[in-house]
Image 1 (tube, rainbow, N blue to C red):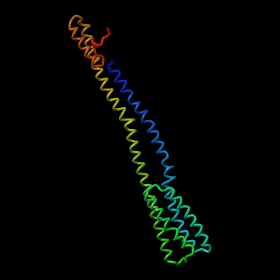
Image 2 (cartoon, one colour):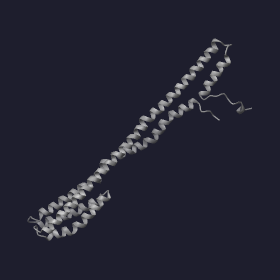
Image 3 (tube, rainbow, N blue to C red):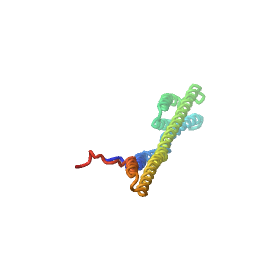
Image 4 (cartoon, rainbow, N blue to C red):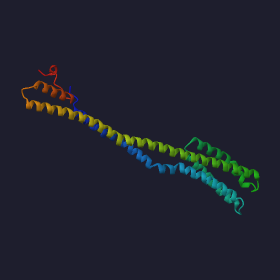
Length: 237
């Protein structure tokens, strides 16, 4: 059975960092790609939802304004069509259950109110009160969209922190740990090699004295370095 020598240990430690970096590298690439697409994702969903909700409120105000104009019926009809389109778009861009509930409540209340608006007198207080309720429901939807945007931003920030920790471990902590372990191993090698050198100098200076002791010290140093004396029981015949 092959011995695990100091050279093998150093090679293993030297190979740990690049191997882990090879594993972490694709994860970091995916993370950076994901963060690069965050603005587009926000524009396509969260920001779009908020923009549609704000457009709904503008459409309601234009309906109320159009009722007092000479071509009020056509203005109201055009804005109701725009309101319906914006409401459909808002429903397609919901991301939370709160947004979904607010869109459903607004759609349920909007149809009878807008139907009544087309034929009601501008001074009809009952219809005006129902329009104010629609404004309130649109405001609720805007608040839900704001909350969804805040939640999305918070999730992105949490993911960023996680990837920062991953980068620190992969790019800073891991190499430092490997360097510290290699430093300790090489320091032990230095001490053992110095002991071998001293023993050899003693043997050179006094070839006939304490040879066995010096050889024993060399043998111990080599054993610590991973090169023990061969086992005679395992020797080949």
